[in-house]
Amino acid sequence: MRLTHEMLDRLDQLEAKYGHLGQDMLSYLDGLLYADYLTYWDYIHLDTLLSLQKPQTQFPDENIFIIYHQITELYFKLSLLALQQLLTEEQPTPAFFLRQMRRVNRYFEQLVQSFNIMVEGMDRDEFLKFRMSLLPSSGFQSAQFRMIEIMCTDFVNLLHHEHRDKVSAAAHCADLYPYLYWQSGATELATGKKTLTLQQFEQKYRQDLIQLGEDYRYKNSWQRYQQLHLDAEEAEQIRQELREFDQKVNIKWRLSHFRSAVRYLDNKPQIIEATGGTNWQKYLPPRFQLVSFFPGLWSEEEKGEWGKRVG
Image (cartoon, rainbow, N blue to C red; front, side, top):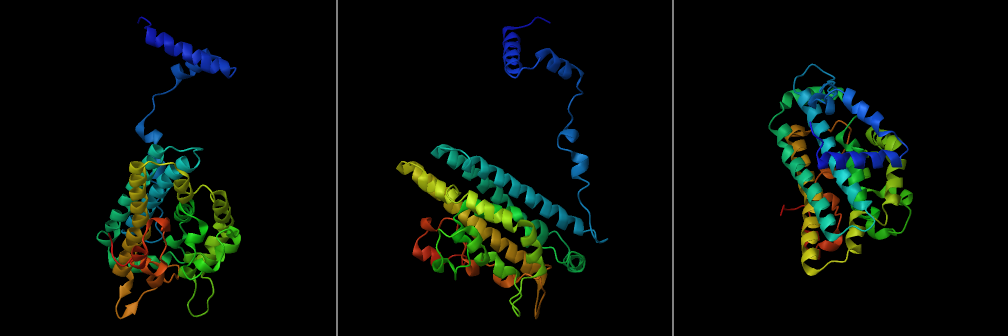
């Protein structure tokens, strides 16, 4: 086979690359010569992936529950990768900012729609039985979702709405942490004590989340948006993308989660507790939490209607 100009050019580039690193290009070519062909199942570690479901009971639909939550966490990871790529860029262009926000919007669009996998596709009676073997674990303990929240907005915007106007946004995240909105979702109503679910979560993630809040204090999505220099068209495009993301995460995603809980736990006249003891009736509906990543993009009228209707 005759070496073409393109092939010789690639060899020159490889020689320059490895020479710059003090490496012998021929050794790497030998490695390429002896290496086996890559297969799809090896590349994505398919056998490992399919072995990660470890049901705690013999109920078949517990597998649906596990796989659904694993898929959800993978979408959270995709969202975090998109946000990290955006927020670690020193001077993101408007086009790059828009591209990354469109990515996370697509991920959460899939998440919002995906709840039908459980609502319509999992046996209610089986769920109410196998869920008792999962105590005190809860989807509440998803640290990746908390990371997405923290990377999207100022820490103060994640406080329970009753505390937001009573604290300084410049306060250290450790001082603001006790007032985060999700604290009330895993606190016993009768005693005011933290549930075991919340205690476990804080023991593992509290310090990491506080540090993340400090790391992204001046470079979260809301801060980065305000630092952009935009013309009128760019401003409108990004504004609409951010508003859509705010709605998807803080209204539609939460409402989908709430409707799923109603489907399985609202057994009138009895209300069944969530596995982690979370107060899901008050914690999940967005009209009670009033969480918004980008409050400056909404009118006072829109804020007053937050979570009451889906736009």
